[in-house]
Image 1 (spheres, each protein chain N blue to C red):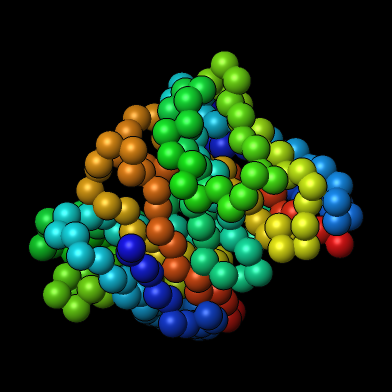
Image 2: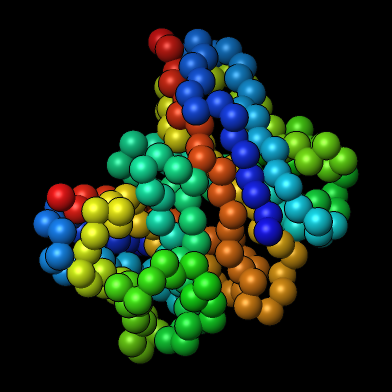
Length: 113
Length: 117
């Protein structure tokens, strides 16, 4: 069974540009989560989808970040326009049901220059 | 708000030896879950071990075990017979007992473990 996959593995963009990160959860997992680790700090929660609905988006830093999960399958996280402080590793996780173990992807390393 | 602290940014251990990674947390809740995740370089982050706060018995998974001290809010990870494949970034994480809409994990800053051959 394929695990959580994230694309791209690494993205380098200039300040002001737009970047879209993609996450494919484990098949059948209704719950999808986005997290971010900035500059060697702790991994912080961004938001949680249940199917296509946003269950909790309390961790989204500002309105430059837009997450979608159309159809309840894969999810995208768009940053527009990107700022220097957005650099970091963005993790996606999925779980089959509420309260179950969250399975993580390898992350997307975003570098904003 | 809950916080998780990992005070050891880096640790190293000789192959086949035992190493303990520290984690402390702060919460006002009585029911919660604690986790250790590991991320090898450029690979998926995987769950190593999980502990339910209501269980007094320390969780064990093969060579991995925890020392859960609820009163002290401490949750250390012991790796016995360290192997080269244990080299990774280790993250300690906390999650509240399941409340509607509250599923997020709260992580520490991580400990990078190096295994010396």
